[in-house]
Length: 345
Ligand SMILES: O=P(O)(O)OC[C@H]1O[C@](O)(COP(=O)(O)O)[C@@H](O)[C@@H]1O
Ligand SMILES: [Mg+2]
Ligand SMILES: [Mg+2]
Image (cartoon, rainbow, N blue to C red; front, side, top):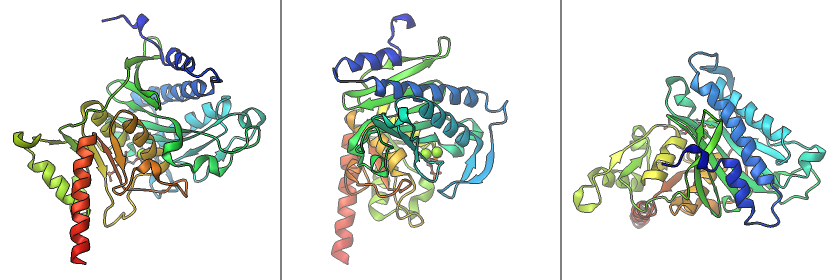
């Protein structure tokens, strides 16, 4: 095993990637470094969460109507702080902020990029020491560089992402990000405070044996989803099974596991949430981009989710993502159920 000295750091890797683009300015590398720095600060708080006043509710309700956790706000402030004070981002959109924030100063207005993020994903797991994460999505601006960014810079379809990634605060802390050139994972070496390239060129296995869905909602899912979940439960050695159900309740951790081991993650529409629960711009699009570049697939149950034209910052969507063969099997169940419904209509 090579010693850590020989493993590329995130900075070294992103600068190496720049060599592939002679016109590169280093702004994307700077943006990734800034996000990595904010995540290191969040990581410190997460690791000692029980000892410092960072657990529990902050006392307010966010634009989603959810109780806001102290760590949601801490993480939001860290990310917004480094991006505002950096030179690589013209504005941000966050789960925890009602509106888009345009930095609108001379330096920021020269930035080519805007960033959307879910500062803390898996909030229901914060107080119980279960792995949580941060999710981010980066777009090249469509508005005029030199002027303030505009709403149009943020409301682009997911297939326009330049980069997307996440940080898992788990047994180890990992930053995984994708560009169209590939998906790479970096593990934080706390001794030197650097992210090291531990998982180069991640590929999502075509098949897996893991399905992730909130079973508590089973009777609130549509017929196609119920039939697919039932088929997963009935899998055995004769047809690619048996499958196992794994659901952490932090999408970052559930999708990360499936990306590495193979599997499918589903947050379908329910009778209570017919539009889905998860947010398109800073939860689903980043993961769809990452998993699809790693060879997997992601849909809203109808179409490739990366082709959806966003209309609002916090819009929600049904979400299905994972190993390509498992996604195709799911789609066959959804299509069959839809046809049955249509024929009986
Ligand atoms: O408890 P439920 O309804 O299964 O929802 C769990 C889902 O909600 C989320 O926690 C939503 O994200 P936030 O924690 O960022 O609000 C996802 O991480 C997770 O997959
Ligand atoms: Mg989230
Ligand atoms: Mg969140």
